[in-house]
Image (cartoon, rainbow, N blue to C red; front, side, top):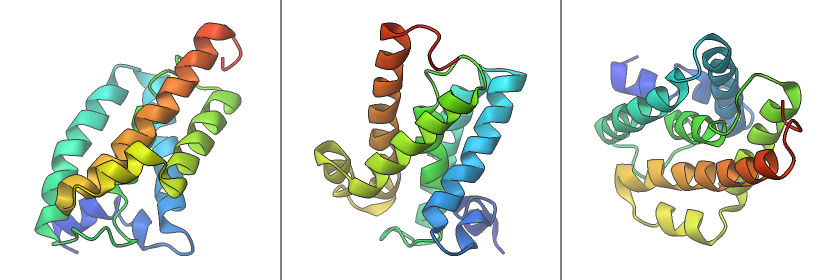
Length: 150
């Protein structure tokens, strides 16, 4: 497996069936939980780095039509969705996972618009937007009901 394909497939998690996007998001959730537990500032850095590296990997694989095995975008979106979390908790992780998957799968307005950009940018951008929407909702819950997600 080439390096771009290894990265684009989320270290092979996108090759698993069924539902490679959900499997990739779950792998990202576990990795994100480890980052939150070990050193929380690593999470936004990883999301930014994987976004840039993901653009390169998707373009290098000529996977601009977002085939199912490409899940590096799910990694980035899932990590963005987790940014409001301050600690590892089952409720917080579950909420970040479910919200991100709902917005990624249903593709409401801004998510669909981002996807329509096409190319590697479109492959990555729709998951970024889905992650931002999920993070915004989690942030509102955390500020409106302190301690709920902890």
